[in-house]
Length: 409
Ligand code: PLP
Image (cartoon, rainbow, N blue to C red):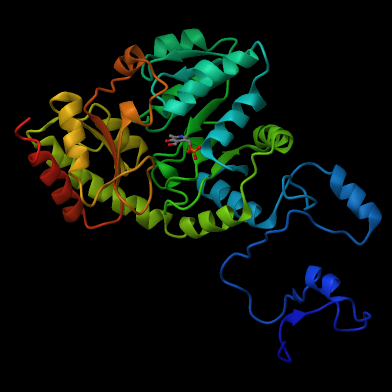
């Protein structure tokens, strides 16, 4: 250790010289002096030690989230990520999770008991749909599904339910939820509106500003942004987040500190990435719309899209980085198209640096029966495209070359 180093060792000063095994467990520690690190500190501790026995006992009994005792309850790097996302979403607090599904499951378990009922939009990420329609009923929690814009049915279903659930932009058909309208219906029935804001990110939409009580994300997507972490986060008022945190403490779907650190690094470029992928997605949506091998394009920033005016009001005039399109001619032609891609990668995620494409019926929505796929509008030619940060011209050339190569089918 050079003299003047900010590293100091408990073994090197007044303490007696300890054995190698002890010194290996208690290495020199970083002392806060000199310049401040600009990158967040990565705190990998799973537990925290206390000199004062009473303080230890007090901290262990404190409200979840107050102080550091054990990393399933709270960790400093994870706390930094939670504070950052709560700030971007404009909510009082946030609680991070090991994945988006962990976040969604814990919200449902926090707000519902056996015998309770959820009201949800029918257009949801496949695993969320499976959680609500198949898994939670095994624990006595049922869901009434309604079309996203069938406000009469939603209003009729809400009384007596425990939460109203939707996605800002529905996966994978890219429908935009009218959050103000849904929040008003939920408020009338005194039911919290819970919004999965994964596709929009707080750059395009902040559901809490529109009346949502709980906002959640798969941080695996835009928040992380580089296809290198799994994570989830739940944002809301302190009382709601406290309830979710209590479930997380018992169930244990904790975000790993390194993933929180990666997600914090992702947040630094969130704004740039979301704007860039939205701008590129619009260029691609326009071109696919005019391509003869494409039956339909679903993208809310297209002038012809039914959700255009909502995107204008609610998504800062943009459509986001994800679009849906239907290859004409069914599964065989769709498969030839997918296998002809050279730059765009067939892979099951979205919201990151690389452009990814997924065949929804056979990958993300396999939990749905043929009838359910039909009801939510997923045909055998349907693809979800997550537009990354490459040159939009290169993405488009790859897509059109692969489509053109199917012309004989
Ligand atoms: N919500 C949406 C809208 C998603 O698209 C996904 C995954 O694709 C999830 C939640 C689940 O997130 P995770 O894969 O991080 O569990």
